[in-house]
Image 1: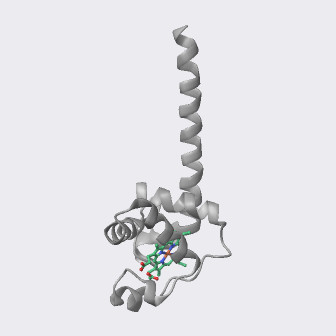
Image 2: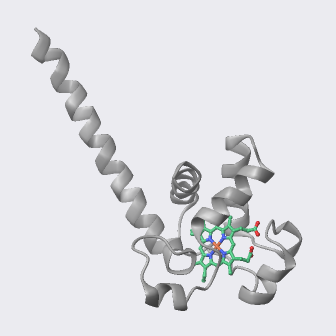
Image 3: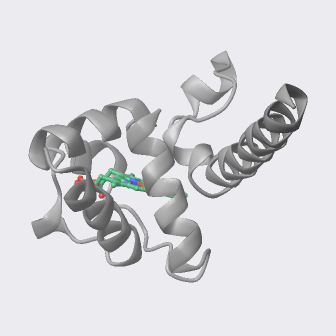
Length: 121
Ligand code: HEC
């Protein structure tokens, strides 16, 4: 009887792990080249094109203590970035420029999953 209860739990847990792996590699592919996700190498550091994702998560969390607001902000900004919405200071723009819109790179559902991933990581 006990095994019957444990098995579904194990299956559920492994499905969850797989799903988060998928989101992790999606995030690396779509945002990681600029925001330094995945393995940090010297080469990537030298070619850094944007603030790393952990700096980004911190900025968003401070500005939007409510998690859902933070997720909405990331989605909105990624689709329609603009200088007046920027949380990062002027210096960031001077160094990296304003982020190009990622509208054509992914769906809103993918983006929601990635935004959640970035804030939780
Ligand atoms: C081509 C490079 C590039 C890609 C790809 C990219 N970004 Fe960015 N992103 C930037 C740059 C540069 C900034 C800093 C300037 C700014 O804030 O606009 C930035 C800033 C941000 C900010 C903070 C904006 C602020 O200042 O408040 C968020 C949120 C963000 N990116 C999310 C994402 C997400 C999510 C993805 C993946 C779907 C992504 N970015 C992909 C270049 C990129």
